[in-house]
Length: 305
Image (cartoon, rainbow, N blue to C red; front, side, top):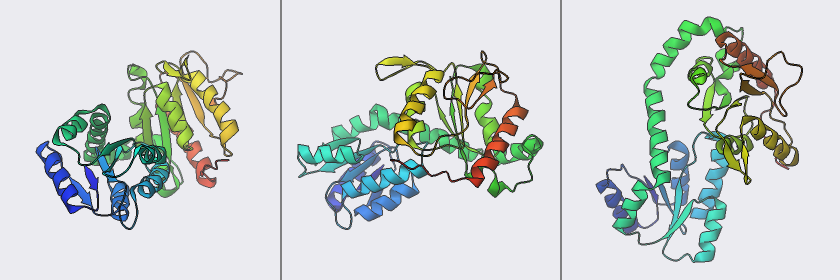
């Protein structure tokens, strides 16, 4: 947990409370310190004071959300604004700026326990734990890359390849043919963001451009805009939004499908290609290599009208 508050009393009180609940607690005494810590570390939960010296909570969350969108697309930091003086209007401003929730001070111990057990904090913790396990196996991943580098061979250096590239994979967790896909993409040097439903896929597509997008045609149905959407219709819906809101087109959206053929003359609406399931590792490697070359030469910034 990160507690950002200029009051030493508040910081120590919250720190003791969360420590009793089994959390490690980090502290910042002003907004600028808090922003630096937010960029440096991910937390299960952040409590952010509204009124502080150097930089107030509203400015902190605005700057951080802008940074997060570009630099940490795989994780949404759960941030609760706290204040002893803010009114309902101030709380609304905080929510619009990027806070997830508002609470008045002092925060009672029972509320801390409720926060520790709430769904957003539990989900954040589970995701961060999974990332931690991935980092522990980084050496194994490097060894695996060395063993399989022939399938991802290239005359380009690693810095020119996909190490700075991100691939969005939207897939059905229950689909056996896609279980090894994330690992294969990572072996080829790409950073991977994985989502498992249409809502999350659409949200991630709107956040930024990816070097590659692999979206399952059998993605679990997700209620978006009041109607049901699967993989194909998520792409179509994104393309409609993209025409209105973005200058730079998202390239390399490939549909993972066992019904469309890669040799078909017609592609699903909005898709740039098709990868037949189960995916062939050598074909995936070739596709990523071509995308890496293409994206390395281009400008990946998103320009919002």
